[in-house]
Length: 276
Image 1 (cartoon, rainbow, N blue to C red):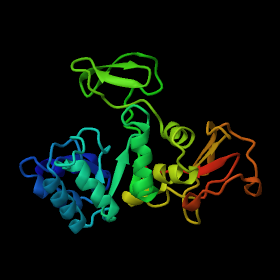
Image 2 (image 1 turned 45 degrees about the vertical axis):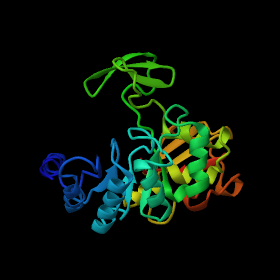
Image 3 (image 1 turned 120 degrees about the vertical axis):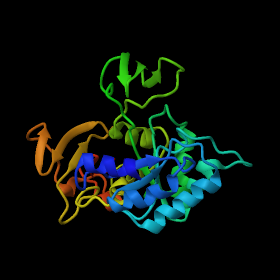
Image 4 (image 1 turned 135 degrees about the horizontal axis):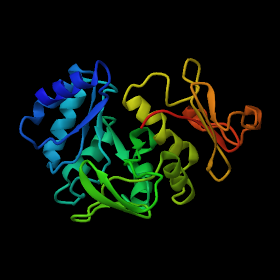
């Protein structure tokens, strides 16, 4: 709790949005309350906890009711033991919590951190309201292959994989959310509306972020316009076009798709952004 207080004070009032913690660590039971005092969400991850320890942590987070009122799972499956039928571990406990509406599970859908069938299974079992696509991107995103530094550790970027030079473990990613949405839709067959929701509305709701995550009255005009192949066409932030400055965007009446709660429209879609 002392560390949580120190981080929150250093960041400034209202800046700390979420923090990841491991339920099996000494004193971890006091962390949900400490985060709640600062209005921050609790994310469970980078953990070797048992299923029972994880379930108790979820209960503690939900009882505090901070932010979106649910527990978050930091990039499910990564940074934690895998699911075993006699030792379900954190994955089993978090899947159950999400099914009960007590957790939102972060998913790195980049084709590196998780197999495609795993990602599709999560969408099929839980739906986009319980999944939040996250990039886990590090500073080498958008840069050429080579060696970089992540948190003081040397890493190597080769293609779409970033790995520690010592040990070879995955160390973050280099994808952006639009790439993940495109992969989910074109390679896995996830409905576009579901992929967009998991990349925008769900993470925004989980963090109780006002005015982002969907297109509607009173929300910020954050819009990503994409082509039919889901490549980027234009970006609007807070009502201002960033690139190109004056794009040729079809009127809403010409939209090929209206994607559920995200209000997607456009050439193939103009998705409400916001979230992680």
